[in-house]
Length: 85
Image 1: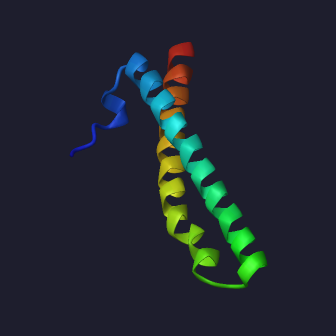
Image 2 (image 1 turned 30 degrees about the vertical axis):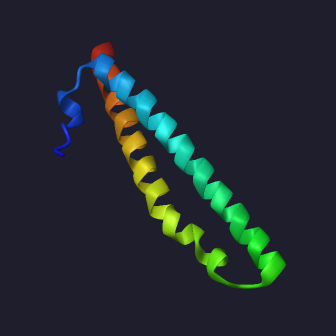
C-alpha cells in the first residue's frame, strides 16, 4: 500500500488524518503503558523473565505512531502559518 504524501492532502483531510492518528497514538501509548505495568508486576512477583522484556517489543510501534502524529501536526501548523501571512 502506497502512502500519499501529507502535502497532497487538503486541510480538511489533514484534520481528519490528525484525528485518526491521534487516536492511534493514544491507543499505542496505552498499550505500551499496560505492557510496562505487566513487566513491573512480573518482575516484582517472579523476578526477571520473559515478561520483563516484553514491552521492548512494543516500543517501536509507539515510536512510529508518535512520529506519524507529529508529522501531521507539523504539516497543519505550517499551513496555518502560511495562511496567516
